[in-house]
Image (tube, rainbow, N blue to C red; front, side, top):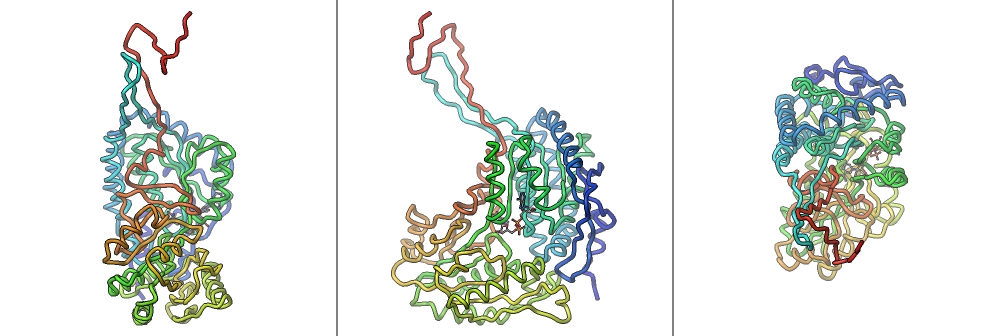
Length: 513
Ligand code: NAD
C-alpha cells in the first residue's frame, strides 16, 4: 500500500518528529497536555502536540507585544517584502503542505493544493497592498486647514480558525495583518494542529532569515480553553474568529464585554436558486460540487437547492444520476471525489440530520450511510445524501456540516425563491442559476439575496481572494481577504492641520477670550 508521499511531506514540513507546539518557531513555549492528531483518511495517529498553558500564553503575549514595537516601525512596503518571501516559501512547500492538509483534514489532495494556492495568492495581494494602505484627503471647512486620514498598525491580532480550512484562513488574516504592521497570534483548530505547526515553521524560517524578532508570528495550541485566554485578553487589538455560529456568539460576547474589536466568519446555510431559465447541465455540476466537495464541510457548501416546480423533476433526476457516479474514498487518491468527514462526532451529526429530516416529514431520495470495510477503517466516510424537504423544517434551518443536500420546491416568480433563500438565520453565500437578466438582477438587487456573497451562474462554494469574504446575520458580519478588508486590521486616524496663524473654530463658533 502506498502512503501517497505522506511520510516525506511530514519530514519536509518539520512536523514528523516535532511533537510539541511551538510558539514562534525556534522557541518552544507549549508545556500543556497533549493532543493527538489522527487522520480521518486512515484513522492513523499522525502526531502529537502539546497545548499552551496560561504561563506559556503569557510568554507568547510578551514576545508578541515586544515584536510589535519593531515591526510597526518598519515601512509597510518593507513588510510587504517579507510577505513576498513568505509567499515564495509557500510555493516551495506547496506539495508537502497540500498533502498534510489533505491527510490531517481529509479534503482531496487537489483541494489541499488549492488551499495552499490561496495562501500564495493572498501573499501576492498583500504585497501590492503594502503600497496602497491609503486613506482619503478631505476639504476642510476652515480656511488654511488641511484634513486627511491615515491608517496605523493596530497591535496584536488574534486568529482563531476552524478545522475545515486549516491553513488558508490563517494566511488570509496574517498576510494582511503583517503588511498592516500587526503581529499575529494564531490558535488553529485542535482538530488540525499539525497544519498550524507546519505553517508556523515556514513563517519562522522567513522571519529568521531576515533577522526579525520572534513574535511577529506566534502559534498557540489547544481547544476553546486556549481560545478563551485570547478573547478575554485586552492586549488583543483584534480577534478574527472563524468557526461555528455557536462559537461566534460566545466569542462575540466576551470581546464586546471589554469593548474589543472582532471579525467573525461563522456558519452558512447556502442555497442555489434554480429558475425555469437555468442551464440544467451547469446547475447539476455546480450543485453537486457545492454539496459534496470537501464532503460538504465548506462554510460555503451548498445545503439547499430552491428549484422552480416546472423543472423540479428534471433537476432531481439529474442529481440522482450524478450522485450515482460519485466515488468515495481516500482523498489522496485522485480518482475519488468525496473524502471523509473530520471525525466520528461529525459522522454522528450527519446521521442525526438524516434522521431528523425524515422525522419532520422529508423524503430521502439519495440514501446516505456510513461506509465500512477496506479503505474506510477510520469510520469517517459517509455517502452524500439528498432529501426532499420544506424550507421551514428545523433541520433545514440549521447548518449540517456534512454532505446532505435539501431540495426545496418553489412556485411563482423569482421573488418567492428569494424569500425562501433569505428565510434562514445564516447569510454567507448564495447563487442563482438563470440566463434571464431580470431574474439575475432581481437576485442581486436590494430586494434580492441578503448574503455576503451572491453569485450568478456559479455555485455557492469557493471564492477568489480578490473579493471581500464573509456574510451577514448569524454568519457574523466580518469580511476577510480582498477588497478593503484590510481596514479592520488597522486603526484609522483623522488629522486636521492648521497652517495659518489664526485659530478658526469649526462650524463658525465664536469663542472670544
Ligand atoms: P468550531 O466553532 O467548533 O471551532 C472553531 C474554532 O473556534 C476552533 O479553533 C475552536 O477551538 C475555537 N473555539 C470554540 N469555542 C471557543 C470559545 N468559546 N472561545 C474561543 N475559541 C473557541 O468550528 P469547526 O467545527 O472547527 O468549523 C466548522 C464551522 O466553521 C462551520 O460552522 C463553518 O461554516 C464555519 N466556517 C466558517 C467560515 C467563514 O468564513 N464564514 C470558514 C470556515 C468555517
